[in-house]
Length: 471
Image (cartoon, rainbow, N blue to C red; front, top):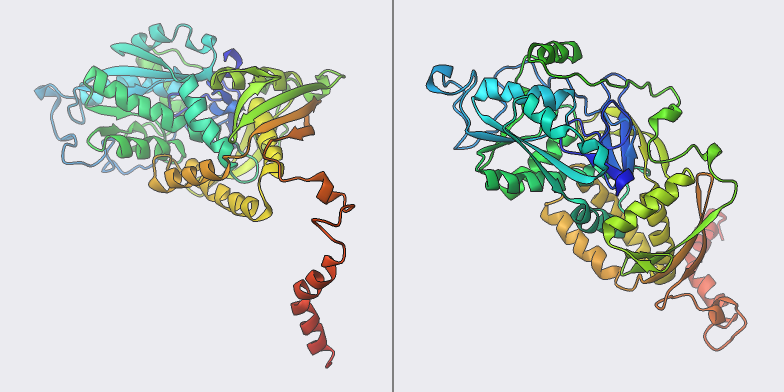
């Protein structure tokens, strides 16, 4: 999944939309540009979130009473003096930090050591961002003061257990967003909990700001999987109030400083922001056809060739990217209430959503589709809000799994200059019957049957009209 990788481990999730460092996910790039903050990259649905700013380098509160360590019986005693072997704010043994190598997480490493007297284990998840994003990362982490860097390949798990369930559910946030970053956070946080156990850490840190969605997504996962872990959130307690403060802190500790991108929602995204797709204007003049094989709502093959989940999505990202598929520019409502501008690249995800949706037009009846679409909205909200391990989402997922049991077949799509057009769909469980739809057979459907149906179906309207006319 070379083009779809993103070191999506930190608050500055370089998950997909351009930035100085741009981690992304298998789903795509997710670069969200916040017009009034510093840009960072976030991941998309095997696409790129071109400018996804986690509002890094901003402090959630000036209230020093808001501590970085989540409250629990085993919480850190912040009154501990450095003389007792702790740091300026307390004592921790070892902290696992979600690490991207960007400015924010690079600054957090020495800050944790200074303030909690702890060892820092940096953790980076490969969710499809590409090998290049990992180059030199270990040296950079240790250069910032970390004792080690742990890298885990989560690509297959991410696509199979997170992306595909959302795909099956038809979960799209606010009409456009395919939830790439939202899905990546819980799989990364889950891995962090496992790493904390492996290395004997007593705390984890995500480095996200209080004004972003990712802080919630990380911490809700930590709470669900290991409520005894301390959660250190520097953005809630340190004195760094903005980018300049962070840069000064970085210089003081001899930490390399990456650049950032600032985007105004009123401006059109520049061409160099996109990393996974060509401009539709520059795409091939000839269309390309792809056939997606689907079993029970889950993609299994491309052009007749069965592929693993991650490989399948990677191939479609590459194919869709060549044709400028999956570019989205939107203003979304963040979990905390503010609006933000996001530019996403999700070529593979866009192709797959189109395929599954079109196959459902054959295999699901009207009432089922309507109920599924209604629940998909709630499903998307739960995922966006970081409630992946919430019993409600898990229960809804079982419902989605059940009603899509017969969503099996294949869909052929035409990719051309940014557009995805369905050209064919087949299923052994198709509810479409040509002998009925043609209206030529009177055995199953008789034209005369319509008269009684229309009279009964339109009775309320007829009665109301009679009342209004005094009949």
